[in-house]
Image (tube, rainbow, N blue to C red; front, side, top):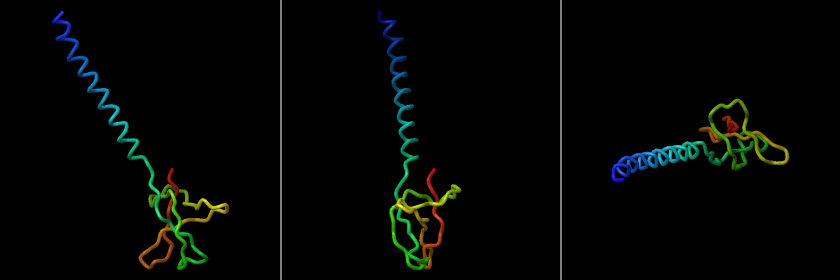
Length: 93
């Protein structure tokens, strides 16, 4: 009986530790894929007059332009050093 406990207890502890490590790693991966709302700008009506909007976009080129969530979507930009909204933002895929 004592021999069985001496063998099973370490195997059980190792199994629980492995399961905990795998589930923790999955949570970290999910956390890193979360998106963050950023402030983008809509040209109103020209690049030097911008309206701020909160969007789920990125500066990484994904091939799709970031669009506002209005009834008629407009392209969303980020401001450059000259305070004009002309730098591209891209849709998070």
